[in-house]
View 1: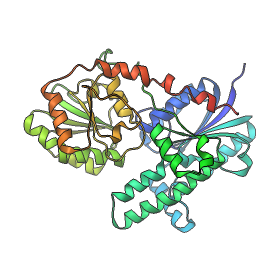
View 2: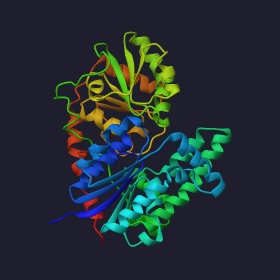
View 3: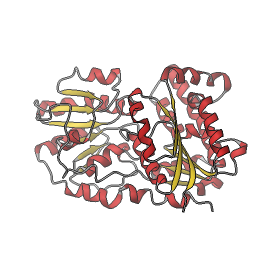
View 4: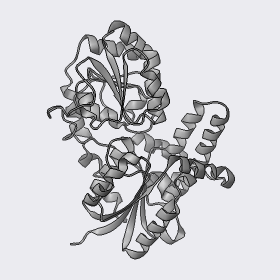
Length: 401
């Protein structure tokens, strides 16, 4: 029996799955490809990823990957101040991708569209597509993220972020009204979005949790090669290091927590592992004991050899893959409440949660002084956060009622 066709739109090429949003969008792609012939439209915003474009043929019958230069996208985004739109909409607008979407929907018998990220909904938010079965994965409540940014800035940028928060929230409501299902990465994000929407829309709003590939993140596998020597004791943070929430996290840790740890363990290192480190992150490498790796081929050896993993996020949305991956590798995690949103793991010897710098330091020192058995961490992930389990509800939402 031939598979039905589906259109899948992503704001970033979903392969390789080497950062938070791409891990989720890739696993959605894999799940969709098992039941549908997937026509994928996306942007490529990192030249490094062009080498992987043709890999998409493993999961897609057709794919359109449009280049997105950040400087050009930012210029387009500025037009929002003339049109009254949120910056997000013109930032991701693209005439050629729109033509491809229109051509694809016109020439193939596609009845279902899945949109990953609200920024991509504009391509199918048109009257002629209102009869399609449209599912949008918001992932996070982006408008509230901009509110958080506004709360942490002053002056002109505070106004810009506040404007984006207010306008984007209106657009999010429009999409929720017009699309059949609105999905979010955690129950907390879904609950937050329900409070922002009219009561009539709440049945459409559902959580679709992240998972982790427990076969890939398995400490029993032979350690992969690493670009850096890992023979000295260290603790680690992993993540895309051009993402503001991650930048804020490592800066806070380096300034408020790391000095207290280093005082007790002068031979210890703090490794910041992730691609595209910002100028602020690179500056941290000047501090004693801090190593900024930049992009690495495989994050697993850096997790595997670490004495513990830290996730000191103070601005975060949804379920953090970095935490799931560390737990799957049977590592002790010291994290803030923000980093643990939606995971709901039990407090235990292998999971310490606090938002206070002094307590964060204390938890790290306790683990370093007396390493604990972490076998429960991986087992808990296997029981609760495999992709097969977390994506199971997607099957029912893909069907028309």
